[in-house]
Length: 522
Image 1 (tube, rainbow, N blue to C red):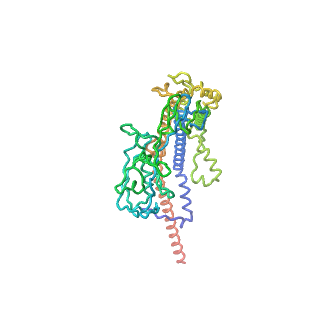
Image 2 (cartoon, helix red, strand yellow; image 1 turned 90 degrees about the vertical axis):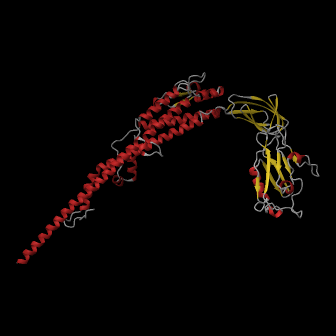
Image 3 (cartoon, rainbow, N blue to C red; image 1 turned 180 degrees about the horizontal axis):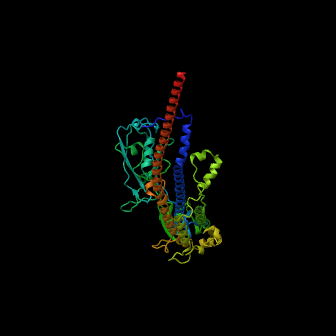
């Protein structure tokens, strides 16, 4: 039940202002709690920002210096680019040789062996429903075609369609999506053409014998054979000729070539030998080729790693050394209102400073990272330390462990043994000493991130799962209790002033009464 408040009617005093002034003193502990809460929230956010930087750097390591693909980038020289394009996929060593292309791989084809027309021998409209051309029931067709492995795929599913709902164009679209063929209708020639999506001379998956690359299984109403005038497979079609003696079909063809003196074939023009991808482009021609490390690309990856590491430790060291201005507490709402925007901005800058100063988790993480860099990697010969590839620590103590690259020395190391650099960074092992530098760093970063998360959590964390969050919960409870107490104190002040007002009012009434009595007796 709230107390009725009388604000200075009898006394003439500004009771509301007096209570407000009294409450300012009462609220001072609350202001301190809110300032402490604000600082803890800043600190939590700063911890999380550092964790994000560590997370990003951790991913950079994984996607860069820790991947073998970074070090197998090759510059490939060929004597005749028109014969074949060559690129390295997974070869860790350099390669060279000769390549003679006899024949290129080709895809099997077939086409209609008669004009596709309606019952009046007129060209059809491929957009009209098929029911207009005599089909009354659902049609079921199946097309087997050569797959990427050079074998006839007999596991393809039936295609069922309703001629009352489908046109020739829509059926062809479904065929192209479901089967390993491309089929289209040409209104100029009134024919359908079919091409296998994969090149090569098909083999039977069970016997290995040569078979047709495109095999059609027709519906009961002969949609493929009767309406589109297609043969049962491309081998049958290739045995038939039109009036110009051009076959209605063509068999698939394997690529045949000689690689470093070894005659061989492939079902496609693009294939891989010993981790090197070849794409054949020209028949009856040869080329020589050789590879060498792509020094510039590998150098760029390592340089990016070093640069990002230097940025990371500069940022973290800056936070560890940042001065804390204890006299600059977070502004209360009243204090902020009394300042200009610029004054508040400058105040906030100092108030937010030093939230992570001297933090033990961050300091320990940085120290361990330095050890990860300096300690040799055991179990490998050659490049077992960064210094051997031209990466050293800055001699300026103000840099606090930043790395310096000697580009010439690093380029020389890349040219001589890029796989050795990969081992230096990415070697696996059961102990820290056996692990490559990148693996050590990722272990240290993960441990540091875990430590920070225990203190500050992450965006999806609930407060009771990390230290600062639990402290914030406790502080919020204190603030709630104190606000309840302030409400009681404010009510008490108003009760006291109300009682005073009532007493003054009563006194005034008595005085008025007495004066009336004295006046009435004269």
